[in-house]
Image 1 (tube, each protein chain N blue to C red):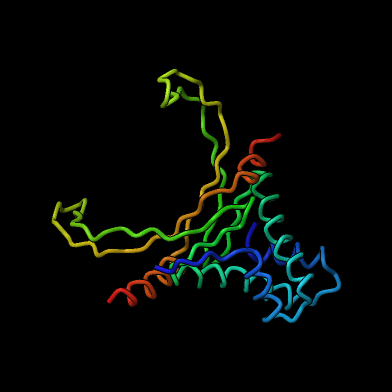
Image 2 (tube, helix red, strand yellow; image 1 turned 45 degrees about the vertical axis):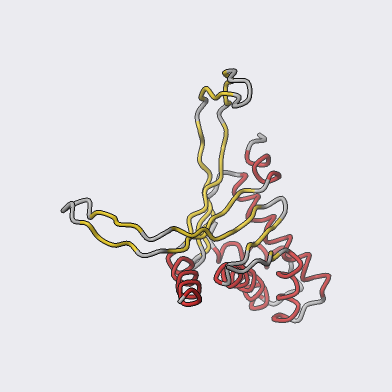
Length: 103
Length: 93
């Protein structure tokens, strides 16, 4: 499998190339997209990006956990967690390319 | 929020941009992430989260209705781990 890591810098470079905004504005927009998604999730909204996937927020109740080092019981407080579900389009795209490469 | 609502929101925040450019920006971001994952690369967006691909080995599964054994081929699944900052943001009221 590939051993590269794609970062914000790559995404803004792609916008600079594809859309023709300045490099600076491209990076501001990448941040803005991530901020808007984060804000919607913070409000408890589900975010659905068609042909990519959906992000939803799930509430978890309190439960008793254990400190694995000391064995001590500690309460895990109720909290909200983010769940990402990839769309079939994304799953198929990944399998199409990676399976073909393995042959 | 859907992808088109996200585009509308960004267009409101950036009145100097054409709507079609805003659309292209959003599409480019998700296409880049998709293609990176398809290459087997990892996508790390600090504070937001990281996308990666995990491999699931081939296995013999069972049709839950009939109990019949079926071969399931090896497959790759996309995975997302929430970033620290976003995780904290979800838990502040």
